[in-house]
Length: 96
Image 1: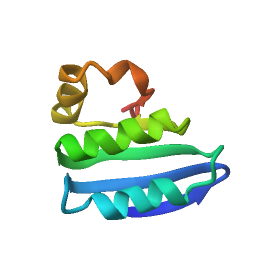
Image 2 (image 1 turned 180 degrees about the vertical axis):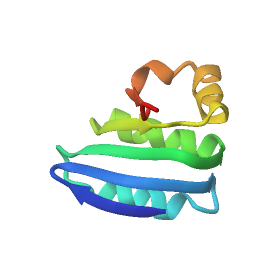
Image 3 (image 1 turned 90 degrees about the vertical axis):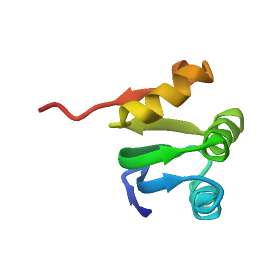
Image 4 (image 1 turned 90 degrees about the horizontal axis):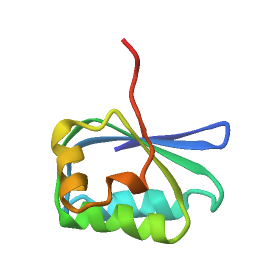
């Protein structure tokens, strides 16, 4: 995961898997962002997310964090749809 701050938007590029093995780095990023920052999660390279990744997203949402999911892959969208939580997160896509 790579992260940067860009004018009040905290951006992280998620790569590979978001699961129990990678959760600590992800939650440290979420916890380290300023409380009122918009957190943009670039997800085009995220291949897999399990329930621990979903739980981290929901925990951040319930804590009042502003999360934007950017370019999520169909597999990630499907997990959020199955959990019936997709509507909690704005989704951005790059125009081609």
